[in-house]
Length: 237
Image 1 (cartoon, rainbow, N blue to C red):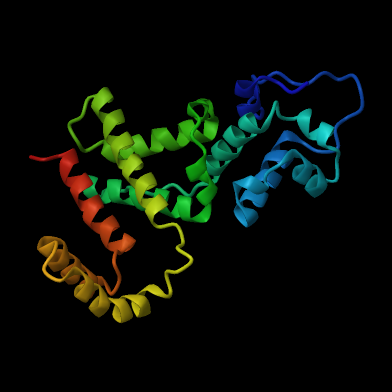
Image 2 (spheres, one colour; image 1 turned 60 degrees about the vertical axis):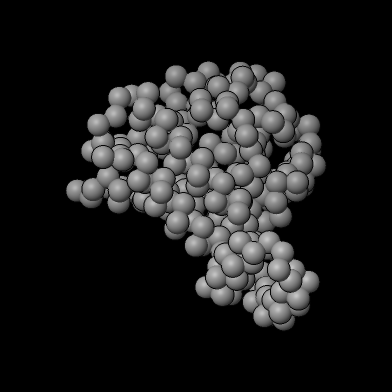
């Protein structure tokens, strides 16, 4: 039987309970199961992570996989914590708070681009993992120069990371992204004919934005605009 999730998350800690010595030794480790699951998710998406696929990848039976994890939900938590543990954390040095927080935001955006499946995992139990806690502690220090109490510091970091997750979702690859400049150029005139004098504000703003971005929208522009305002809100003085 696998251990409770908290013990699986901290399985490499000296205080973690170990499995019994009786019976044959497993051919794979819990860490190997988690790594194989992450590799599958990176290559094919989270839907590809099934016990059968993991067993095939590791050369063991599906039942053997279940001796390492209690189920798929627990496995997703272990995968997320492992991704956070391996995430390159930004350095701060003597940088000002805006630069420090900007580095945190950029690092998390890069993480979600590398592992887009993380956006599909919403399980508060990840907060108990060693990788997640180490990441949280490091990122809280980005806010050291700001006069925030502990509760406000937590809220400020949450605010930044929530913005990053929303932006990462908006920046997920669009299968028609390469076509949009040509479609925009071809359809803009036709759309103007259909609209006529209706929705003047939408036409004016949409035309200006579309001409500037050569597309109906630009996730990159939205990222830069939004992040600047997020940073402004952390210290409005």
